Image (cartoon, one colour):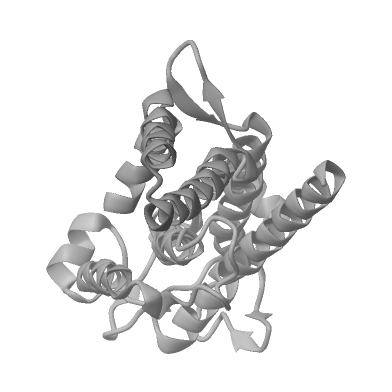
Amino acid sequence: MLRLCEFLYLASDGGYNHVGQDIGCIRRFGILAGKDVLEDQNLCLMKDYKEIKDLPIQNDFAGDEICQKMTANDDLWETYIKVIGTCVGIATVGIFVLWYTQASFMGINLVSDGHTLVEFSQLRNWEKCSSWSNFTTSPFTVVGGHMISFTDPSDCFTVGKVKAMTLSLSVLVSIEMFNSLNALSKHNSLVKMPPWRNPWLLVAMSVSFGLHCLILYIPFLADVFGIVPLTLSEWILVILVSAPVILIDEVLKFVGRSQRWIAKEKMA
């Protein structure tokens, strides 16, 4: 903080004038040792000032002189929001579709609970299932032996979506936790900025996951939130679907670093 105050003082004309006056006085009175020290200090402060001045530009920020605040580059935020937002949407909807339409995914058995699979076209037009000929559904079980049964085949898309909804919610929670790891550094890879550099973040992630598991595995809370417990294989599926957000963010960071390096070389 003291160093930052020194930078901010240096950024003003008063900072440079103060150092200049000190050097002028020393030259006048011939204190050579003090002159050398202050001149070295002045050079160091000028170098620090240049680094601080260039720092916002290097990090895709710019100064708004009218509003007297720093603003982010529009392209930076638009790219991040579009790419990461699209990733979150695909993952949460994707796992919902997987559970309804696929028997397995990357070696994980998705029908071990006994639920009925449907075609993607049927899932898209589920409200018309009453007109489908010979359409039947089977009840399925969840952790704890509880069975989800239906009085009408169409119930598999209403009452029966509880497992698919739970998977989607768990993916959303997991992706946000992975995104918090991505936020450890705006530009540096997780290899250079590992999660344990911020232990409090790991504590916060553990608490968040703990609360999510709490509402999953305590029957009363699960009923309140309209979700069901997940098996170990289903948790593995959740992690597999959520984890790519880390790789996508690493790619975005790499592209950003490359662009800044190219811009720096052009300015040199």
